[in-house]
Image 1 (tube, helix red, strand yellow):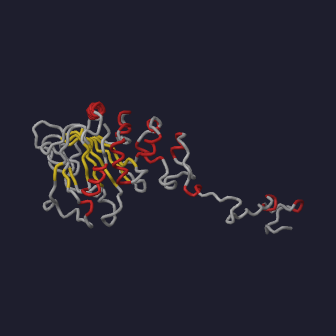
Image 2 (tube, one colour):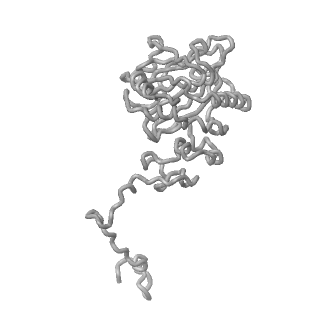
Image 3 (cartoon, rainbow, N blue to C red):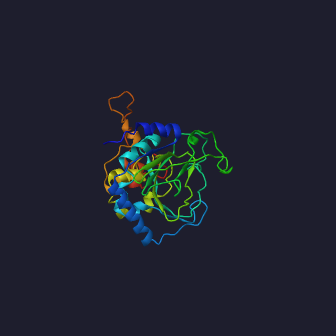
Length: 307
């Protein structure tokens, strides 16, 4: 039965976040868990040991480069519809990473994902992110903490400390997805369990007019990008935003590199009809020999004047 997303669109607008229960197919969730474990072993992933990423949390970045299964994540219809409701069409993959938050991890600093952008707040949405629950998310094992309504605050001071900010845990069952506005204050919770690893997928998006967090065009090998669908290549930034931004000589990179369907460049959407009153006939081009100053037997004309 299709999920009614209307209430979730409204909650995103009002509270800055929403949780869609059982949004992802169980077989896909199980396959993603298996691949997270594979990659962590193959890449010998270790905690970053910094205040933001933690010292009991293992992260694997740039997942689209590491396996075909990850191609199913960015265009997932339930999540993408909610993201586009915030960012509008032609949004982009900003980053795709797995996060395995282990026992003993402390709470992450509360932050907003768009806070590095030098914009007065509130502003038009530039970032909208999601967390896929590959295991149950509970308050005890570090469920993401949220500050409802904070996406509407006027120019918050992110560096004043966390003590006076009340948060709630985004508890959700395996297979559910948390979606939040990029201006919403949030952070990973503390994992106080003895043996539970909280595994999630951070599927992050940005508006088509800003820079992506991870460089999708260079970070994903060309031979891997060639296996993507045209839709996924667009999400990775190989199209033209509103027919203009990101073009190469008025063509999209996806068309030039991978033969994807042509996009009409913005200015070419309004061709001038030769019969229209605004049409200005082109002046007749001068003869090439005259341009070159060729005056026949007398040699070149250094002045360029017609002899």
